[in-house]
Length: 299
Image (cartoon, rainbow, N blue to C red; front, side, top):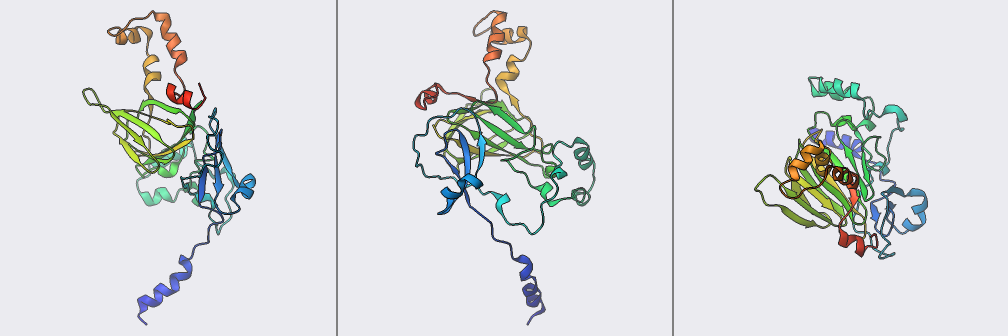
């Protein structure tokens, strides 16, 4: 037999992977106030009490169908069997500015990767994320994995966020100053809109499951869930630190005289009214869109 063939045969045992313990996983859309991740299969209902993981996102609409069929598979990578014991809980490097600065000043990629001491430091769990990675509001939350919360991204040139929007959840208008955003819906429906710059017409789309759109770098954009069931999206960025600026919050955060001057050509209001507007600006992900609120009984 050819030596190359013998070599390939000898490597076969090394290429055998342990079977996953459970899965695939589906988001359960019948949950009224949380996103429940349940294992599929004939015993899924019986095992949901002990194996489900819940992400709570605030006020939710009454369930429109208690027997709704899940449609969006979300793989739980942590469910795969592992041949090695889990490392100690303190091996996470999230928000470790000293370590991140060291990575950023390391000249060679091979030296950078050898600074990591555990394989699990290359795994990010969006269902159980590090602190300071969440943007929460009444309508849901977004979880970001950038180089600060996930230092393994240093040198990759990319990052990612996952958005969990409740019924009528609204990710208020914002921009990313250092990256284009690639947004794909993995559960439910999203209405999206962006405007690139002055004189550019606004781009408006409705996205279903596994449809995507792109928001160019610096473009003002927004997403909201027009339905009474949860929606989930995954956003990829071509930057380890894409940044974000909520437009309304930033504008009304300017000095009062600047805000008054900026809107004076369209309408006028007394200076004291600026504080009223500030108090009415919702958190990053907010309940919005009047018709959806009425439809879902959230008004």
